[in-house]
Picture: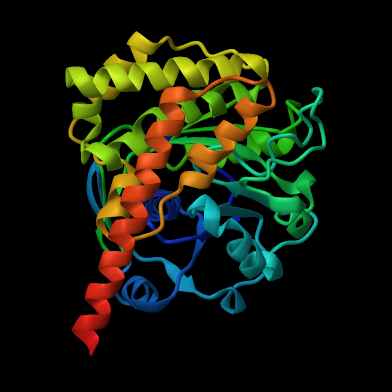
Length: 340
């Protein structure tokens, strides 16, 4: 870890794999960390803390876990949830927010705040797939949002038990691309926790880099039941990944994004991550709703504004949705039968 950063009141809202990884690293660095959790996860975190296995070893980290009613106003709130759950989570954290609180949505895909401060031809408009009729934007002043792109591969084997065997990286940027004191402060806090933290002047460039990675792998991983290593190396899957990347790259370019990584470099970096299951494949196997709104539908919506055909991307998203709904229904039926 780097030198200690000024102590902040930090809430991690959402105790999944990413949330627990961030919470554990921040708590280990001496920050005042509270974790918003419920049910079995709340019980486990309260009694046993978080057990994080990463490149530095296995750490057992006590954390202050509870509900929003247990915490006061926070300096920083990380929203670590699936994009379809963001509205409900924003409602929960409202009591923790004042005018100085930085809210950091650590979510996949196209964020609801995408056109806030962007200044382009669509400035002020909404992305209906993730912000229907502006309903999410209405929950929080957009000036309190700090954009982030998370490059952390983590998997929870049980509540509070997480493995994250690749380097931790988070990139942050103001939605209006300005340089600010709060951006520098946030990066200092995260870097001191052993997570590489990069301040960006153009957050949407890296946002599109992650969107391309997610769109080309997450839905396909559900359709094929494949790990990242397989997606990037098996010839049939690799060809599909490249086709989706090329389609999404055109959308990114249409919105002025500068994506520095070419498809072949994407493949090399992805294959090097090893037999990692995407977050969407993990959700599929557990019978959970798939994060197709922000990772898939929002990209198609943005493409439609420029009449960009998304032939391969659309087909794979449709197949993933079919598989997900069918598996979720089957899982629910089995659970009902078991409890009867």
